[in-house]
Image 1 (cartoon, rainbow, N blue to C red):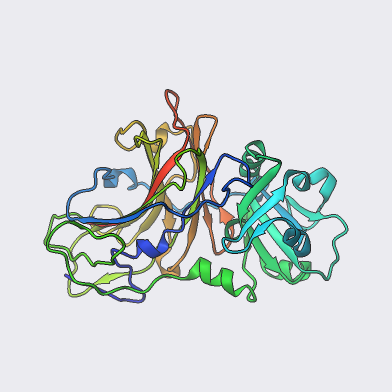
Image 2 (image 1 turned 45 degrees about the horizontal axis):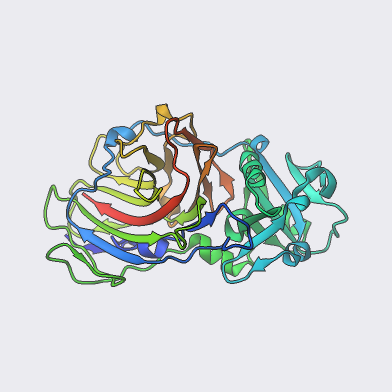
Amino acid sequence: MKLKKGMRALSLLLVMALLTAMFVPAVSAEETQSSSTQSSVDMDKDINPHENYITPEYFKDSKPAEPLQESEMINLIIPKKTLDSFNQEEDSRIINIPVFYLDIKTQFDKSKDYPNRYIAKNINSNEAVVLMRMPMDMLDRFLATSKNNVVTLPFANFFRNYNNITDLDSHVKLEGDSIIVNPSENDVTLMKQISSASSVIETPALESSTRTGTESVRVTPQGVDTWHNERVFFERASTTVNYNYIIGQITPDTWSFSGNSDQYYFPQERETYLNPNRQDAIEVVVNYDHYSDYPLGKVSLFPAIYDDSSDVIDLSNYEDSGAEIIELIPNSFPHSYGYHIEIYNGKYYINFEDMNTLQWFDQYVYNDQDNPSTTFTEVCGSSEFF
């Protein structure tokens, strides 16, 4: 049973190229705020079941999720020259914004055309602008946890470049209670980042489990009722720093099998581990299901939380179950989704955003009431197959 390139194929090792997670420490922006480099990278391949297996019952009742309404969002239009004047780290596209500039009452005027849109005062109608967009609750947490009066944000997840306000408006349209924000055709770098998927790498099959460093190796399924997985681990850059926020991107793509129509599960995951002893785990999962009674051909995006090494916590036990299970549209693949996981006041906040449209979904909130973790220590990208 060999994976082949269909419309665009997703191999068992594609997760390596899709893992774009960044740890953000709860310290000053001047102190390693852009720590996205990993201290070690390993690949782990075997044909054993993953210890955090999620049964189909967890996502069998999924339904299409509605984007977050504009009443829950905030949109700031900022002159590009102003944004460029802030301390920007070009290589990682990190923007450091002074807290005082995010004071809506003093720095912005409210727009009459769109809900919760604010335009920087004294902006020139012909100058280049940047749209900053996110849920209001998220901005409130960023402000509450800012250090040295700076809020640090990655550009691709929160900003869009436009020639002027008229150009911006031509890329925005209302859809129900939400708006769609399309990227500018001139923003080539961003367009590539939010829509690209890696090509499949053809490599030999493994006869047994190995750890191969950074070598790319294809795992070929060895028969029915076997579990195969491939994982890449990234550790936090500093063991002396608490990281309270992790951000990344996951890009589901189409894939197919050659000459075979067997049943399968195919989870693609970002596994984040908290505290040095992996006290808790939070996963972001894209699940392809062709095995259970789950409707044929559906692909789902959802979070999974393991509290003190428990079984997966049911969404009904969350303080806020967010958008529940998000159904994805396969004919839109490759399609990138940003994920944001934050520790704040003993609670875990998980947000998903559509990177193509900058539409966000309702946030998930889990209240770890007994002994909440305080830092992210490790992130693992994985592709698994049953």
